Amino acid sequence: MACKIAIPKSEFQKRWATLQEKMAEANLDVLIAHGDEADASMARYLSDYWPLFETAGVAIGREGDPIQLIGPETLTFAKDRSKCPHIMQLLEYREPAEPEFPGMELATFEDVIAQASGGKEVKRIGIAGMPVMPVTVYDALKKARGKARLIRADDLIVDMRTVKSKNELKCMKEAYRISEIATEYVLNNIKPGMTERQVVGLAQAALYENGAEYEGHPTYVLSGKNSTHAIGRPSDKKIKEGELIQLNIGALISGYSSSCGRPICIGKMPAKMRDLVSFGLEAHYKTGELMKAGEPAAEVVLKYEQFVKDSGYEKFLLYGPCHSIGLMEVERPWMERTSKFPLAENMTFQVDTFFQTKSFGLRWENGLRVTKTGIEWLSGKFNDIIEL
Image 1 (cartoon, helix red, strand yellow):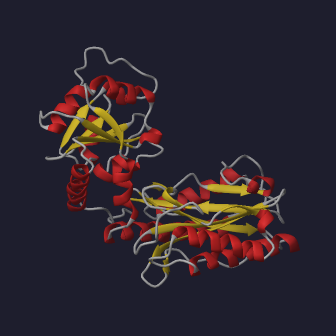
Image 2 (tube, one colour):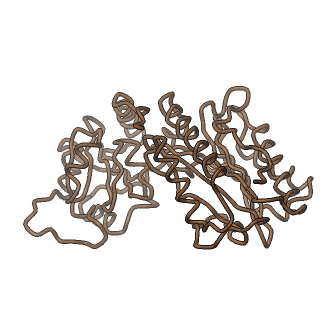
Image 3 (spheres, helix red, strand yellow):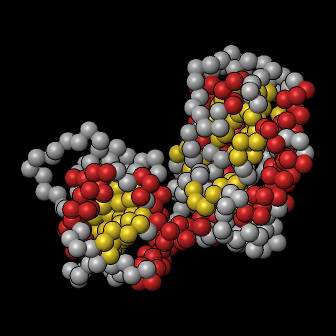
């Protein structure tokens, strides 16, 4: 079934205008946002374009419409998907095999800068998406900048992305709804003897059948010792009764991510496993209780860590308790004891409650929206001890 929930073009136009105001405040003449297939968020936020094989960018000046920047092969694809009215093809955005495309007329970054600035003098060029920008693109920008300075400008767009709009929240709620459907399908069909990858196939079938654009992140099915992986990929290991299985299933809707994380066991959990899984759920809900608009993020983290310590489970704690979620399943800002920001209404976080022993790890994971008085959970099904 096709999903009709999406970000309208009018919202992209509003984003362009807001960013241009921020550029004026930061004294930037041109800003270039970069994205790739794994993290397209900076560029997709401004254009709705998600590249594959190639990378992509968006260039915008203080006035006028933005320019979609793509490689040589994706012009028809970009015309169909991008909200930007102008498109320029550059060799620097080609795929990593680095074909030369002899005889093909392509733009240069000099052309991009001139068009984005309207031919005016450019003294400062902002770059958003620096963590994923390859050296080849950065070097080409350095060569083309003339006397202009290159300024890291990720924060301008991060600030815009942090508090979600009504349309963004609609996309995220739909993504969580589909994630829960896929989780239920896996719980009803997982069997001992299946490989972790076969269970991923179950999740993917349910995600796409129910309207997901893509997976919100690579699906986690990590069993037994593999469940100790805080970040991991499923393998051909066969699932057994009595071991912990870490499920993390997320859908993507119009670029917006979700994830439902559940520790499960086929059969009865051993007593020590059940105890830690149960405490993990208690700590998960405790995190939500600590959050509301105006609360300093660092205070939430410190109170969470103290709760874990006072409960006697500190040695099992790897990290926590929250990271932001939106166009990426993990995006800025991350909540840490060093965080400097207060929570604000309509910020969205993924409560990521992860504990590990030497033999197993568990993760309870749900999304939430910060409200004036507390939080609204974006997912809430299957929040019990799951023994199949």
